[in-house]
Length: 225
Image 1 (cartoon, rainbow, N blue to C red):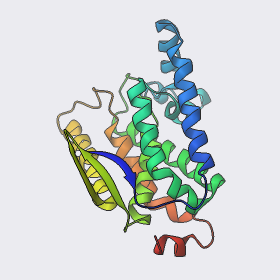
Image 2 (cartoon, rainbow, N blue to C red):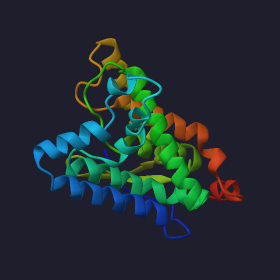
Image 3 (cartoon, rainbow, N blue to C red):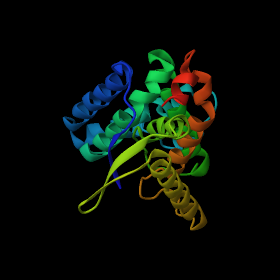
Image 4 (cartoon, rainbow, N blue to C red):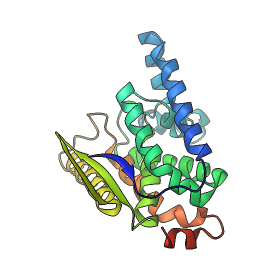
């Protein structure tokens, strides 16, 4: 299932959402111009490598990737997919939080997502990059905030249907939870570089924390959406 648009219009231009998207695209454009050794150095230094993060609580540099990893991506499809989901769901969440609170919420759920990956696969030496954990936080907030919303969805190869947003996001979250649990049960970790537990952690953080970041009057705005 690929979402094309939602039914909830935003009341103002989503400045922070668009800024985050542009920043991620610019960073990936910079990545695409690096040589392979330079790119590997960037990914291993600023991507999240759980085994490196266990080097000690007094080595502050090991904490930097918990934030920087969410601004790096592995391919154009990776960054475009994440940014499309952010564009689709982020404008409405930003509308209800305001720019600064939305930015803090995005970064905060991204860090929680990185921590979820770290604690479920602490021995991994494979770098993980991508905004999907932070975007999952936005999706988790949207899941509870816009219960009446509907998503125009493309079903491969040629079906277009409109489904409730809660169903689309619920299926997505369950698929991540199932995949993460399967990986743990088979002791495979995240060998495919898909950080399922980061997605689960980000989604859960978005559901739990979104109320703290709502601007005054947003609850009525949500109720009318």
